[in-house]
Image (cartoon, rainbow, N blue to C red; front, side, top):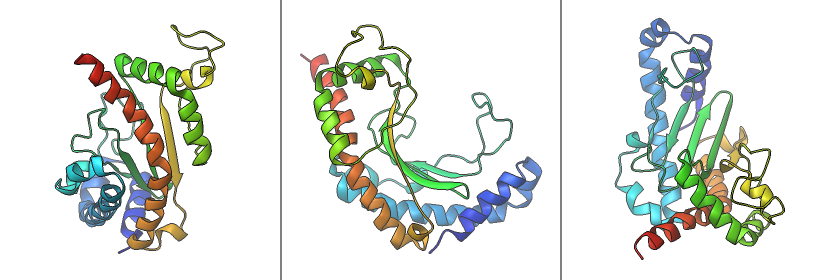
Length: 226
């Protein structure tokens, strides 16, 4: 299988982002969605093979449950268009939960990528991560260097309260979220098998960082029970 129907649909939706067009062309959406769900099954296997802690949870889960809806939640969106012209998924049994940290997949005519990291929207989780990084920043530096990662995320202008301005991990502590992303080229997307190979390579590079960030919450949970 290939990406043609998915990319054609997101392109068309971006140019006709209204409810009338969406309903008139719902058959095209159903076709593209069917392809996306097949792709999720393929990527799910790659993640399960490389991330045992997620494997059992993912393999027995219907891939439909990983998928985000195309209609926007207009209560929280700054965009005025009613639909998000992309096929998106987060590989977690409960994608609305912060934990476990997993992988996000984005397929659109404007770009396709896989991503992982930590996006702690609650202050408690943000503080847990920063405290862990402050103590273990050398390990984080090594992971980023050895795997050639480019971590990105919104940052504060100053070191957050509770840490000194000259802390050796000052730059890491300014982050509000820590993410890494792999964009896929047209060559990566000739078919689902080729894409799976490219995704597998990205997951292999990203997994040490995902494990590092996850460890912060494993330690925090252990401390809560002491």
